[in-house]
Amino acid sequence: MKKRLAKIVRAVIFLAALFVMINCANNVLRQTEDRYNREMFPAFYAEEKNSIDVVTIGSSACYQYVNNPVLYEKYGITSFNLSTALQPPSIAGAIMDEAEKTQNPALYVVEVREYLHMKEKQRTKSVFCVTDSMDLSLNKWKLICRAYPDASRWVSEFLDITKYHGKWTSVPKEALSYIWNRVPSLKKTWRNRMVVQPQNPPAMPDELEPLSLSDLNRKDLVDLLTECREKNREVLFVLMPYIHGSKIPGQALTLQQIVEEYGYQFLNLADPALCPMDYSRDFYNKYHVNAWGSEKVTEALGAYIREQYGLAVPHTPSVEASWDAAVAANRAEMDAAGPYGENQKT
Image (cartoon, rainbow, N blue to C red):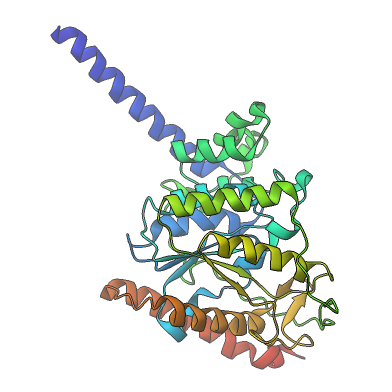
């Protein structure tokens, strides 16, 4: 009996050690093309436990809009973007599950642009932007299974080093810092985009009438709303300003009606009455605001959150010091650039 127990203990220790080795190798050898995608979860995992008030989820319409240092500077709200390019709506719930391993957010902000735009052929295109920086875990496996209908991709997406085996000989030295997948980010992965590209205001219909969502996007929305209600999550659904087609306001109205049926709030920052934008200066392309536009959006979002949810959450001195440093670094960048980059002009 004792010999059998000893064998079981040794087997468990061996398997645990093997898992740690595979996880560390996965962290170091994965070679994502975009630095933001590489940094996102390692930076999030590195935040002090239960120190993040708001987690934002969505596509680039989220991480290029919600300026985390400004949200803290203006409202004392700590936040983190777990948003990635073309993030499919179907995995939002799994991202919330991952966030709750180390944090207990008072509020989730879900940006809804992809619930209006996501096409079926796009739904698996950018899942790797999320999974490639996640820890190996059962939740990562569940997220992948949920995102990919094709089961033949599950293992390679879970052990993402198998996708990048051709790049193992060119691993940069900085990759070693990711061995434990915990790498703090001074500005909480926020990046200022110091480009001004004038835009025409978006098309608006003469009369606002509800327009239907695609069946898949509607299902993803209802699934998320149902899950969040079952898990007692506080969620604010937001549409950010951009240069959209004339059908989007009607689809957004339908989305708002569905969200409110489930007892959640919807904030339409694409409405000029709620978030006035200077389309000649606040964007760097027709889909995204620049650094100066992000400040306007973030202040409007922060004011709404403070008014509707309160969120006067006390933070430890170490958390305050970390966020004060983020604010200082961000403000230094903005001051150096000057209003709308006038100091950068030659």
